[in-house]
Image (cartoon, rainbow, N blue to C red; front, side):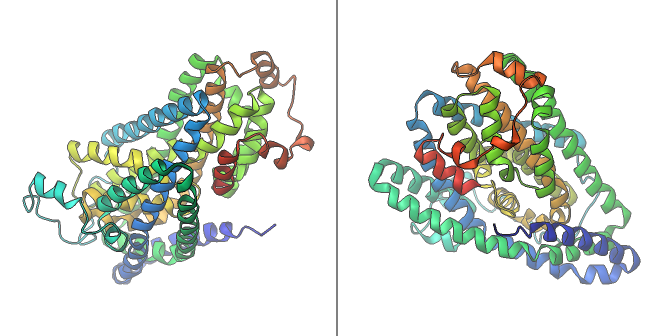
Amino acid sequence: MKKDRTHYLYVTVIAAVVAGITVGLVAPEVGKALKPLGTAFVALIKMMISPVIFCTIVLGIGSIRQAAKVGKVGGLALGYFLAMSTAALAIGLVVGNLLHPGEGLIISGVGGEVPDAEAESTTEFLLGIIPTTLFSPLVGDSVLQTLFVALFVGFAVQALGRSGEPILRGVKHVERLVFRVLAMIMWAAPVGAFGAIAAVVGETGWSALAALFQIMLGFYITCALFVFGVLGLVLKLGAGINIFSLLRYLGREFLLIVSTSSSESALPRLIAKMEHLGVSRPVVGITVPTGYSFNLDGTAIYLTMASLFIAEAMGSPLSIGEQISLLLFMVIASKGAAGVTGAGLATLAGGLGSHRPDLVDGVGLIVGIDRFMSEARAVTNFAGNAVATALIGSWVGELDRDKAGRVLSGADPFDEATMLDSDHDDAAPAPVKEQAAAQA
């Protein structure tokens, strides 16, 4: 098994953030001079926005078609995922507007010139979404044009039926290449974080640290409220299961996620444990892998709160109309932020670029603390998928309530020695297994 080296990146980013803070406080002018390092890293992330958005949206639409093929369970799961992702995005916006993260932290010159709001009419804006050619968005910088073409291509491939499957496989190979490049870029994150944090602290002093701490604390609290409040209530009403009992049952998986900053590391174990809980194999095989692509509650909260923070910190808050349109964009684009380090940053930059291009460079403000927030994102995503599996199983009558009661009470403990990944992989239909393998 190939050794996972991402924890080295995690440690290095933390060290770089500490070094950047130190330089910014001790030698402010030197910190300001390091700003190009953060700018260069953000430019590398911006370079990946169009291919990431295109590949993930096209494959996402194809996955919806495959999940819908399995009937009631797939359709119910997709409807639930869409509703909960939208709720998570909305909660992130509400909490962000209440907290006003980044308010008073005016970072001058980070985002360049603000475009003239009267430069184009609504008609010109809508016409500008239509690209010159089908492939020009892939080499351009218009996120909305990329999204527009990706939707067309995705539905066209879907309409082709089985003859479109080779195209989907081809796009999947391209996506692997894109994410490999993105993973390589993320190894430059320590340098980018060092330069960005040093520049911000050098310019604003301790107020920058207070603002960054505020957004992190606000994000953690929001995730906790969503898990124990929203998900807990839905789980209790929909399946009669206590959220604390379910989370305690999945305790080892949460420790694994925190240590790796990725919910994908616990995918095989979630499949095994939800089957042991009493949810039927077909329901688990459909709901869990699909949820790993479409049910990203923690990522949704992160995208909205980070967007509000960047806008406030750069002294150019988003209007209510811009927030709502950004929410609608994120409902679609957040489906491409699963499972790959850096994809969340690319999606965040894409959302800002589609609505407020002047704020894209502000993503550099988030780079330094992104790793500190990744654990909360992953834990929230995982909890959301566990709750979704239990709910869907209950709704379609495929949950053994008696066994669930015994398992959650500790009377029927999970046997670690019997957890064989290959056995549980066989439970999923072929299209779902392909998706699970891609996500894992």
